[in-house]
Length: 228
Length: 228
DNA sequence: CCTACCGATCGGTAGG
DNA sequence: CCTACCGATCGGTAGG
Image (cartoon, rainbow over all chains, first blue to last red; front, side):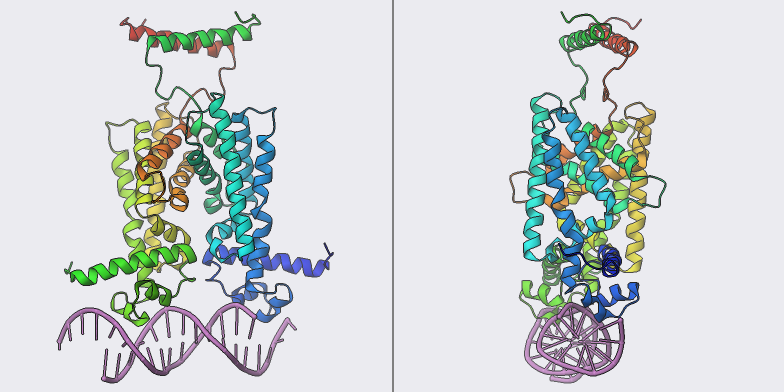
């Protein structure tokens, strides 16, 4: 990695931020280089000093966003100190925080997927596929462990990605809610959405008795009795 | 409403379907009228016989989609035969089915919101605002009734919209899952995401005892005893 | 006068 | 970081 001059780096960063906002609002095709230049008060052709093409803006915007989710999800899934439920909670929280750290870039990536150069598009598709598989694996583990309902883990994983990505479209960094509280709320909802619970309520006396026995066992542990 | 010739209506419908797919894939700005014309095997200028401008395609695509959600949600919220929980379940199911009936149009509406003519954009914003309020009202009612956890109803409603809209981006009508089973899965997850349950588990002996008392009351009802 | 188009070309603007 | 341009293609409209 060649160290670029700080002036140039600063300008690149500023141009990218403007480009992200414009691409997120009007799309890649709907944004002209002239518009990007205008927001930065430079001539249009001067942009080519920093980015070799319009596509290079898009590449720079999304390349740091595309591949990271899979790595992070994989690390969470391998943490044996966390139950699947806690893994899912951590995963959802991480996904929301990640999305809210750069909301405009996520909207661009989601929106203008088809405009990505083929090599990057392939990385992006692989990243999505692998991330989905990691999240589905966490969910399957939780189903086997009895923590989660016996859901279709593909649909559940896709739906939870939806929950975690959606804040990119409505979150206002200048609003009253901070990213962390949104992440807490969404991750709690994500866990709740597939958590095994008394959805239907106990429906037979036998189930009620089993519930009482569970409660008594919990109570026994609390007061220090050995399990019988 | 003037009855148009069936031939013209048929052609309009076919053109709209092609336009929806192209707009959904490459965006409004990223799609040329030439491309739409090519997929329908007509000359580009012939399109002007059916639609007065490129914008008219966009308007026709989304105008039937924009305002309907609010009406349907409002009707569900006013059904006094349904508890808030069942209202939420019905609402989520309806939202998913609605999205999956025309996935491409929903993607276009979400993606190219900024390209809508101002009058339609205003309707769209109002539709989203009102729909959010209806869903939040259902959630608030459920919180008051004790069916739902005491969530921030705005965040919860936005997140549930996210869950219900996301299938538009991954659902494959030719795949093995049908729309109805996806709607069932997502609506169950939506309800579960805010349903009051033992999310944290009982944490004090007093809570365990309360749980046992609840179970005993349930058991008493089952075997026909009067509540004490 | 209507419909369903056609080949050609308008004035402007795109990325480079 | 500008001026001066290019090949092409854009959405939209002309006459027939």
